[in-house]
Structure formats: C-alpha cells, structure tokens
Length: 319
Image (tube, rainbow, N blue to C red; front, side, top):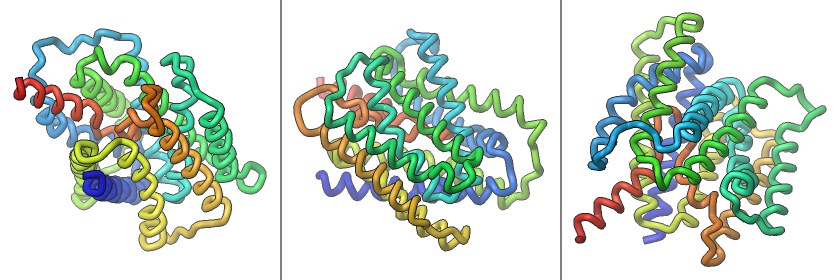
C-alpha cells in the first residue's frame, strides 16, 4: 500500500509542478492578482461541490474567528507571494525557498502549539536555514523582490499551517476552506481594476488549467494519504524540484547554478530529516507530518480536511 501511495503522491506533485509552470508562463504577462482572481473564480464552484459532502448540521460562523481571520490573511499573502515568486524567479529557485516551510513550521509549533522540539530537529532547522542563505547568497547576487516573496510565502504558509493544526479539530472543514477562497476572490477583485490586462482565450484556458490541476492534484494527494503513511507521502513533494529543472530548461531557458543546487540539497535534506525524526517514534509532536496541504495554492483546498471528512463518513457507515 505504501508503494501505491508514494506513486500517487509523485503523480500529484508532478501535476502541481505543471500547475506552477503555467503560473510562471502567465506571470510573464499578467499580475499575480489577476491570475489568482480568475483561478479562484473558476475553482469556487468545483471546491463548493466537493464540500457538499460535509453533512454536518451547522452554520458557517467560525468557532475561533480571530484565528480563522489570521489564517485567512496568511492564505491570501502566501498565494500572492508564491505566484509572484514563480513569475519572476527560476522555478527551481522558487521551490528551494518554498521548501523552507517545514523548517518554519517546526519553529512555530513551539509558541503556537506548545510543542517541544529536540536538539536533532533544532539542528535540522539551523542547517536548513543555512541552505536558504546559500540559495539567496547575499552579496553574490542582487536580492530581488521575488526572493523576498518566496521567503514570505514559506513563512506565511507555515503560520497558516500551524493555525490549522491549532483549531482544525474544532473548526469545520468548510469554514477553513471557504473563508480563504472567498477572501482571495474579494480582495483580488478590489485590486483587479488597477492591474487588469485583457486575456485572450488561450490565456483564460491557462487559468482554467491552474484551477483544474490544483483540484486534480489535491484529489490524487488525498488518495495517496489513504494508501500510505504521511511519512511516505510528505517527502514526495521534493520531487517537484526535478520537474522544475525540466520545465525551466525546456520552456523558460533556465539552468541550475551551483548555489541553487547546493542550497536546495541542504534544505531538502534538512526537511526530510525533520520528517524522519517526527515519524521515528510514537510521539504526537509531528506538526510537519500533519501538514498535508500545499499552502500556496489559493485555488486549492485543505487535503487534511477532506481526508478527515472521508474518515468520519467511513466511521458513520461502519456503525
């Protein structure tokens, strides 16, 4: 079963990588605000249909409005920053920065969740942050707004993931998914008049591909988590760096430089070590393994929430 789950995860992240390559293609001509607006608009009915499976009798008022509001803000900032980083930076470089998210999740789990992080994981965090510095190589290249956006996407994505871990057991999945999606739609439509560029049918189709691929990859990732342990599925996200190298070379004329390769290798190694440490024993102190969603896909949805809904449905049917 673990092998099947791993293969499904590889497929899901290949689709996600293609999704990100389309973002980069469109980002050369359009603002990330415009791309997020149309992708959220197209994704809204698909995600709403998916959430109709939630049979819980309740309203859409959040149990924790302040945490939900902060998580929504994090989701919007993460999406805008990630889309912008993909638009202006090489794909592999953007992924290297986004892969720092597990490191930040580990650190934030201490003040927000009250969890304890041992010396091994602290060491992995320090090494991973050194990898981020290697990728950014201050002094060796001009730091651009895209680099700041990439780091910000990882940081706010990590904070959003930690908030979900804190309130996810009490908030309904539909609340945690629809609020960020609605906020993206409303905020982007407010900015849209200032950045709008007419989109030909082909580019509108590209936005449709972003929404469709985000949904498709998410559903496949749910299947992966149903067929394999989180410790098997989670490291598969790093396969995106391979696709980024291929897509970057074939479609955008990008090539990997030494610092990016070295920094990405250090970040990936530290992230995988954290996953290994979290899965090594019976401890419930596993914030990274419990973060199942890609926080920088505004048109996506919470993988963990759908997995939970399916498990609850299976329990009800078994009774």
